[in-house]
Picture 1 (spheres, rainbow over the protein chains, first blue to last red):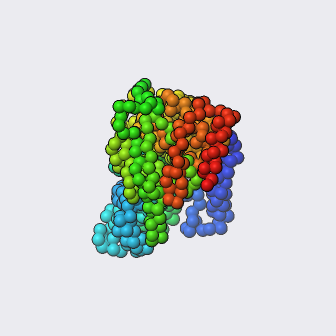
Picture 2 (cartoon, each protein chain N blue to C red):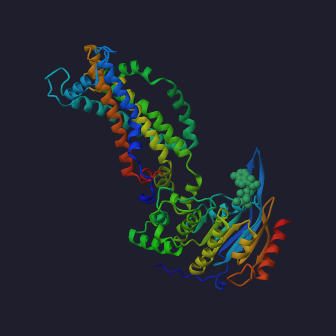
Picture 3 (cartoon, protein in one colour):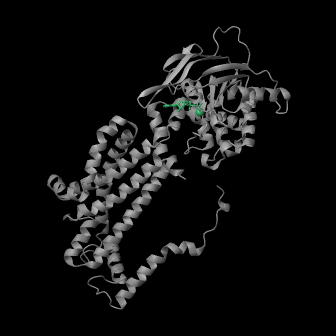
Length: 268
Length: 263
Ligand SMILES: Nc1ncnc2c1ncn2[C@@H]1O[C@H](COP(=O)(O)OP(=O)(O)O)[C@@H](O)[C@H]1O
Ligand SMILES: [Mg+2]
């Protein structure tokens, strides 16, 4: 508990995790310099960096992709946000119910597992027929993909709650409704959090899938479009930015859970 | 501070019924397609302020009995009456201290202790005042803001005790609460329990398989027989308090209990 007792982290151990990325970057630079890989297949880091700067900070219209970042990121975030929200809105209540109530588990279990066996990608054609290209299809794919980990982890968490905790609550006067929020959800929080993080990660994957289908904006659309234009640098920029936004959204998710819930804040 | 006005161990001449009446209890569990009878014809009374130890070998049905008294399990036959009212489900008037710690890991020591009062809807100031009082009763004032994972097993059982004492239950039920503690801590906890019940006039039903523990704590010992479980013997313990382990009368009682438990 006391901060001063903790072993100090040296500079070496702070830098250690960056060793492999640094070596990879070095290899990338060298590969460009020594012309091991032709630039039209994989441009050197400098070119990619410049393309990234123009894409993010350039004024629109200056060059083909300049300054489009905000618009693309906004569109993608909206789609991920809506899809993930739907997955959470259905996944957590249904998961908790099926984790606690055998009839609900009996009703949903087989269906969910059956649907889960259908690869997410194979929903794409049907989704395009149902929802058309763009927002609808992408949100549907994201929601569908993120639902499963959210649901399954919420169910596992709720099922695994120590019955002793619920008994302890009952003897202290807790009724079912209150018990759900005061005991069940906090006790299941580690699982719920895992499910949310996995679901959010999948959301970004399926976002890209949905946006590859020819929508005008979004980070997935940019890398597909760049492929048609032969702009490898922009493809790489798009990939990096998707990774950055995915990681950023994960941090945002965990920190807002920590902010809102004691049980998330006090995870050991 | 909310004073408790119940007198300890006083025979209440005005009251016709004892505080707790357990009548012809039977409990059967379905096991592999048939019923196994775990308790049968179990009966006893408990008076206000008594500290009763229920002593029996492991597997004789002590925990099952306590779960029925707490309202976690329904009896297959028979009745449990608290102040004349039949027990029907868990309630803060019959609180349990479990053997395993059942604290809420996401709440601090203080929040765990205040949990029941919060459920009751008590306002924050009165709650905090009560929590402070019970923290000092269990000697953990400085640990109010610790999480359960950061305190020892003995401390956790103190917190488990405080979080139910604060609700002033009519009967406190304890299921081998000190069994998993080391010998020294167990002795400390026994003295703590005795001093708390002196100050709070708490009626306690204390389940144990430890003969010495029963001899140290009890006003009365109910000896349980097994297969199926029932109350074999009702022994009034008249040894003066505080009880010394070297006292020949204490040693006598222990060896008598040992013999009784064995056969
Ligand atoms: N839910 C249950 N289902 C079947 N058998 C049970 C159940 N609970 C307890 N028993 C059986 O009842 C007997 C008494 O158990 P218990 O009350 O835990 O004993 P004790 O606490 O005295 O050690 C044991 O033989 C145990 O196997
Ligand atoms: Mg037991």
